[in-house]
Length: 442
Ligand code: SF4
Image (cartoon, rainbow, N blue to C red; front, side, top):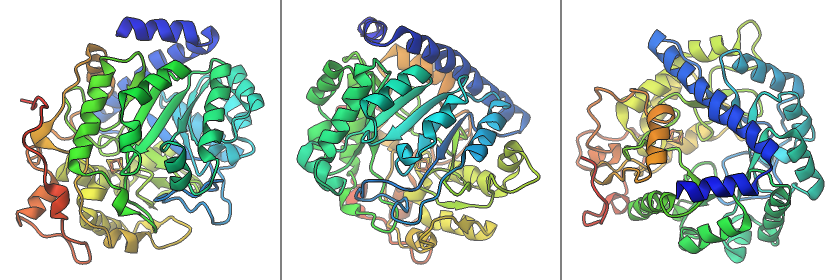
């Protein structure tokens, strides 16, 4: 399979773009993770992969979106953007995730990215603004990979994303990229309405036939003012998704990304391990995109980005609390503890709607990616190797006593109780199947 994948990548991508990808992501980004590990050993901290939401506006209205897309437009302006990139580069970073809103609604986006030919950018987009001209410019620049979201078949996609014609426009954005031989990815936030259509071999085959080089199945997280919890996957479905990813990695010539498991199939939180944090369109530095609270801002004068992130008691407190509590997602599993942490540090609600704390306190406890009874180790030697060196927990869960039980399971057996205002665990979500064909991790 690795050979078929290598052949596809070599034959179907523009060679100049491929060389840039290899030089920046294969060599320099890997080196930035080594630097991160060295910093951790020195007791210092700076995430090697920063995610930057450059704008809050979006042309779509997706179900369950937590970004204030309908509020007054807010952008990261070019000067601030260049400062972030330069300061992160000084720490050895080269990879940046560009998020929104819809990043292509930022009129200066491509000009901003053009200023940093030695960095590599992954743009999370709905693809609607990727016209043939935009795709041509992306190819010229050579340091961008678009990750285009498809949220279901035509009917589901249009319903999930709030208007007709969404699916067709997204597919034409993908095609425009592929026509230019750009290294292109497709992502999906798996939920009740799309799992049966997209978590299928036939969908992965279709992506391969189209020329898509990588895919990423996220799992829907119920956040924000209209969180649509009915879309959440059950633990059985989450397990199915993980099994599918592991199987497809040894079967199909396409890269499949995930952010929540190490090579042994143990769950992790990328914000707790410190590999990433997020900057919102107002410049606030958040633990991750769904935790919309901050004590530091990129706009505060007098300190470097490294000093702000390294010195932030709130960010450090988050990483420690998350690692102490669960290998899964603290937000989903113990929103009460997160709310306490926010109050303890006086972290600001950095949303435009200013209701994030109330939303957090009203959350229902849920299971997340952590399923200690049924871990699914990688079958592919390639992913195992890559994860061993560049994507693992970096030792943050060492010596923690939650390796065998998820936080909701602890709550369910009454060992501790959730804080006031937080709804008790939904037992229906805790019924983890015990007769699955998955090889349990020793
Ligand atoms: S806190 Fe949850 S949503 Fe945020 S990075 Fe960690 S696992 Fe993901």
